[in-house]
Length: 169
Image 1 (cartoon, rainbow, N blue to C red):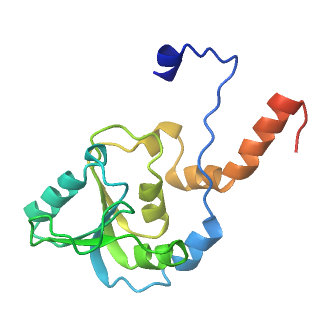
Image 2 (image 1 turned 90 degrees about the vertical axis):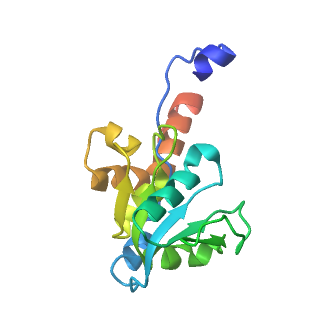
Image 3 (image 1 turned 45 degrees about the vertical axis):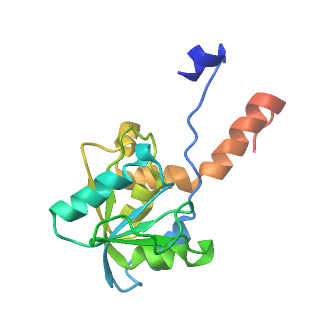
């Protein structure tokens, strides 16, 4: 859609997965007690489906904790099933995330690479989705998508050097 909107016609385009620190995720998988049940985390946006996640929790009579950098903690969203947690320092995020049993991901738009869903999977959470994940469009198992993300920074710079400077790493 950006090609049409802005009239861009690149000779070559690439999809470079976002970088993930796989060893940091691995440290938390199985080493953090599962003391919480259901989590949703993203920017607070209608398109991210936070209200759909709340509705899912209500329909399944379970509590849900919402994390978002744009949502102040302890606000009331009108449901006894919801606790708004706000944001958490990045250094503590994977410990907090890994303490949950389940992650719910029900966006209103297709997300090519929903990073939180991949992180949840790698941390050992059950990932609850509606339909299929954009992660599946890579055509390889999720563990292989994770390996691609583990090389994200290296792949980005390799492409940048090769295509813009004629060099390779």
